[in-house]
Length: 103
Image (tube, rainbow, N blue to C red; front, top):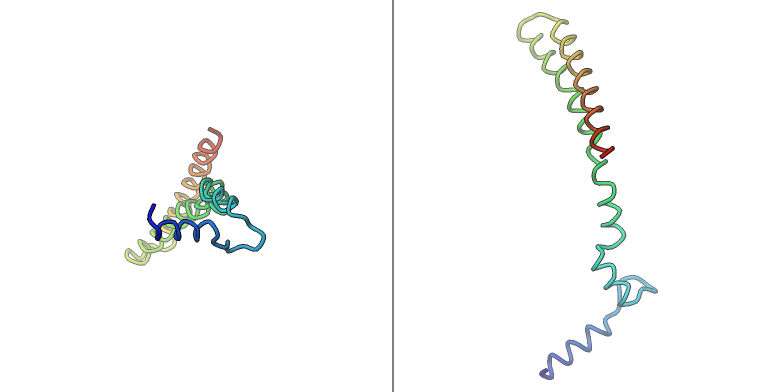
């Protein structure tokens, strides 16, 4: 090793950590495992988009029905049909999610 590599290696071993009370071994372990935040996010990732999935399935058909009512002047039938489709779609989505999380 050259002298500059020895100095850089010595400085990296003595580098202070960002957290008080944390050792170099803690940082190396968290880098290998991804750290506690990364593990927590990985554990909850399948659940993060559940609200968006259900909202999309339940909300868009009535909005489309209301737009059709506005264009064709058929109020409130497009909204009612869209709401019925949205309710059926959200029920199917819940059933699909239930089977997805069971297996």
